[in-house]
Image (cartoon, rainbow, N blue to C red; front, side, top):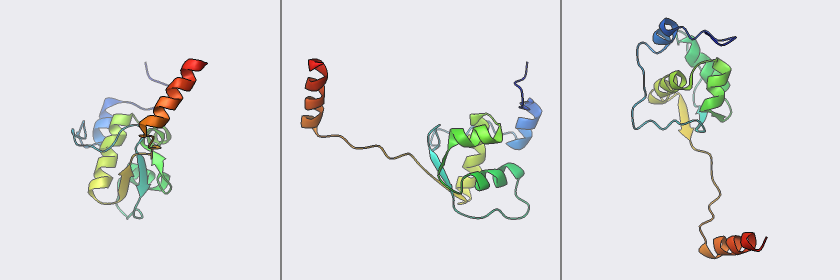
Length: 115
């Protein structure tokens, strides 16, 4: 049974990735990795690559790109890997606030226990 609005036919997905199924263990991509376009599309590029470059003009997460393209995340990661290797996108994880001061964490813990 297929989901509405999606064409997940295995032969289509196989064609999009040219038979590749994974990005490897050193892939920088997970669901929340932010992707940003570093160059404009060029004539002759695969349509999915062009779509990714258009979507990622501003920082966009991998899961958002997959949803917009209506492709599985695994397929999207393969396409992003192509673009990263070609230098057409950059990838980074969202910044996390660094609360590493043990005193602050201890005060938060004490405050929570007092609730």
